[in-house]
Length: 144
Image (cartoon, rainbow, N blue to C red; front, side, top):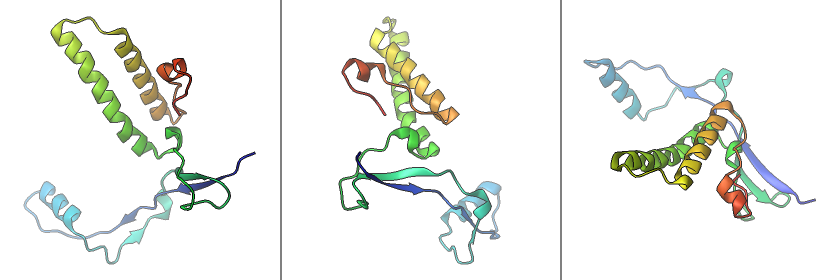
């Protein structure tokens, strides 16, 4: 049975309280975001983020010495899964909108892609594994 070295990570929020003099709340927020001085920061161990896989290598104790293997997206950080999938959803939406605007009938393969993109978005929102990609299954592989 093969061995894998898996790196898991969680985010530990750091915060600070600092007063900014500004004309508006938006200006105060901008000043706070642009402030790079984190001296006196506090770590919030009560609000630890989810554990996610940040790297995987084939072999025992192989971190950073063997080639990095792809991490199936359902094991990535949820916020990153959402960000990565946004581009897919946006692309499918643009194509479907163009079809509607031009009066072209939706191409069957785009409808299938849209349905898969929606299913994956639902899985991300539910914290579930990615659905199998029907196109990849037809070609003999799996997506994630």
